[in-house]
Length: 117
Image 1: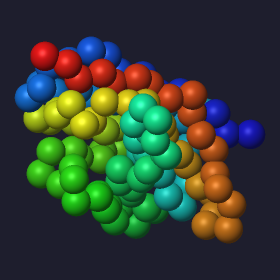
Image 2: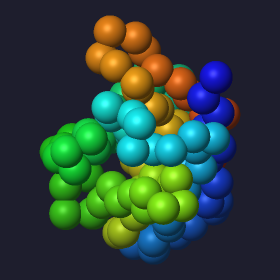
Image 3: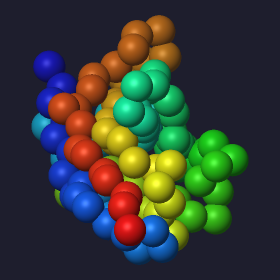
Image 4: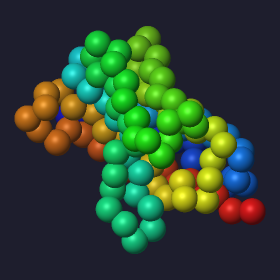
């Protein structure tokens, strides 16, 4: 069973940066896709962006130019580099890893990001 552990969240001011990490219990090169999801207070969990086994990345429009998805295959970690963070980025960020697209994949426990002046 795949285990994912997210770290790196915290309280930041608008315009600041954070780097979230997701550590996997198995080689991340075995996943067909990994992604970051955001759940704002009182809202559904939504995709922020993903990276597939061919290193193809995608991000939602609201984070383009601000957030970048990175991975360190040797360390079995996925990262979300968050720059110019805004209040609407507040919420819990979850890591997801899929072995194939027919199943929902594994989830971590999430890491809280709070943006406040």
